[in-house]
Image 1: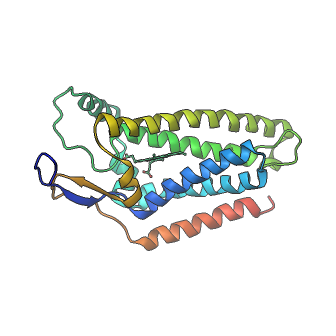
Image 2: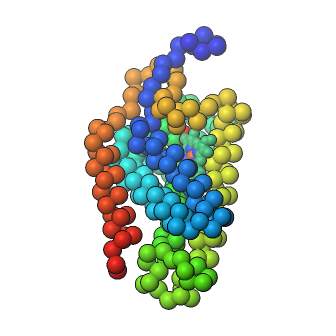
Image 3: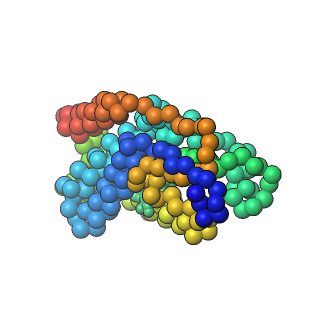
Length: 228
Ligand code: HEM
C-alpha cells in the first residue's frame, strides 16, 4: 500500500543483462577517464575494449532481449514524445499510464548515449598518441595524420559524452526530487512498484545473453588481436 492508501505491486522491470551492461559501462567509462588523465594507456585501451563490448552487447540486446530492453518497446516517434513531455509538465489530456520501462524522452537520451559511446570506441580504435607510442589496433590502416585526427575526434566526443551524461544524471535527479520517483534502485535490483495491472513485461532465457556475450567477447578479442 502507498502512503495514500492505494494498493501497489512489485514488478520486475529490468533483466540482469540490461542492468549489468549499464553498470559495466558506468564503471569502465570512469576507468577510461581516469587512465587517460593519469597516462595509464595500456589500461585505457583495455577499459575501452570493455566499453566497446558492453555497448555492442546492449545494442544487440535491444533486439533480442526482454521486452523492456528492446528498442522497439520504448523508442517512440516525435509526437508520442511531445505528448509525454506535455503530460510530464501537467499539460495535455493524455491519461495513459506512465511507461514501466524507459519513457519516450529517456529513450532519446539512451539512443544518443549509446551512439556516442559507440563512436567514442570506434574513434579510439584508429587513434594514435602524439609520439606514436600508443595507438588503437586499427590505426595502422590510416596515416599518422589521420590517426591524429581520430584522436582529436576521440577527445571532442568525450566532452560531448560528459555533457550528455550530465543531462542523464540531471533527469534522474529531476524524477527523484521533482516527481518523487526513484529510478536508480530499479536499475540495481530490477524491480519497480506500480498500481496493479495485468500487463507484465516478458523476459527471455539467460542463456541467450550468455551466447550473445560470448560471441561479442570473441569478436572484440579478434578485432584487437588479429594482425590486420
Ligand atoms: C558513464 C555514465 C553513464 C552512462 C554512459 C549511462 C548510460 C545509460 C544508458 C545507456 C541507459 C539505458 C539503460 C538500458 O536500457 O540499457 C541508462 C539508464 C539509466 N541510468 Fe545511466 N548512465 C550513466 C551513469 C549513471 C549513473 C551514475 C546512474 C545512477 C546515479 C545512472 C542511472 C540510470 C538509471 C536509473 C537508468 C534507467 C532510467 C529509466 O528508468 O528510464 N546512470 N543509463
